[in-house]
Image 1 (cartoon, helix red, strand yellow):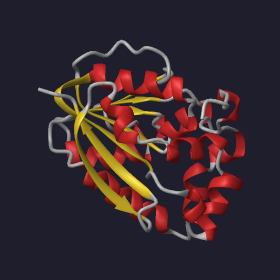
Image 2 (cartoon, one colour):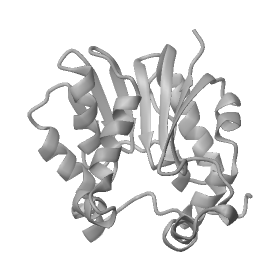
Image 3 (cartoon, rainbow, N blue to C red):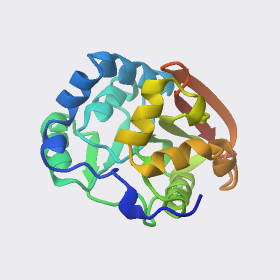
Image 4 (cartoon, rainbow, N blue to C red):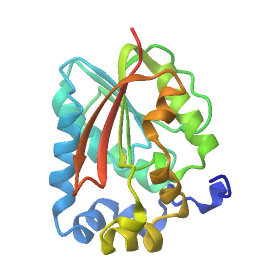
Length: 218
């Protein structure tokens, strides 16, 4: 399970795919993705005034959806390094002063400590080698206030060999090799090893996708 290198990752989207990321996601999912991501973000349980640290924030679509829940009194700090993604993010979120974009990697130590109610990461964690996943999880733990929650929207843990053919094909032919490595690991155990406790789950798409919330102790 440790034979992978970060070069196997496809987590950093660039070029044409990055410039038209939202449109491509809508097309390849036949219009399913916008409804799905809206529902998943609602399931985080954000409330007005909460602060969110968004890991790998992409085009800003997620940040705008989260702002609907935290309101003008809340705060969203979004971390993103892709130039095309940042350009789209800034354009979409420009009218909202409580959304801040920061050019910073999430797999290196971050300066945030006990500052945020929620850390959110969407379909990014699976794209890193385990050593860097551990760094990301540690960054989330440190950034959260006591009692705060780490919300991970990503693949659930399942047997890829037993999955329906199109899921198996997507994991092994479209996704980066690190995706199956992530699926095969116990995500709750991974999080518990960094101090998280009290897990909550919501499943989607025949239980192949999951929103996993893990809480930092009070």
